[in-house]
Length: 104
Figure 1 (cartoon, one colour):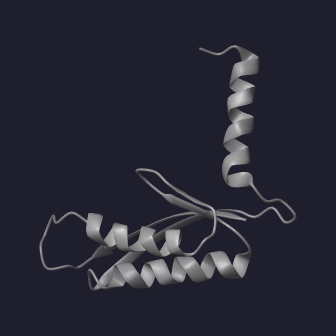
Figure 2: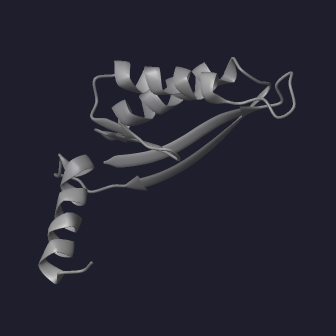
């Protein structure tokens, strides 16, 4: 399965403070997990089996919790049993389709 998630603290001490330190803590948990992952400006995507992926997301959420009194968590999952390597495979197939269609 692939799960894209975004996690951020709220209720911290400074109104308008950047959340980069909290997000960095969450991403570090993901990277330390050893599971395939990718982070962009909006989401971190992680690939693995249900229990291992959601364990990592739980721990990342707990890491962010240290930066505020509340945590916001957004998830989107692609559950496709029997498939792996989709974290890069889906993008590779998209790029081939674009090239094959000669779209500019």
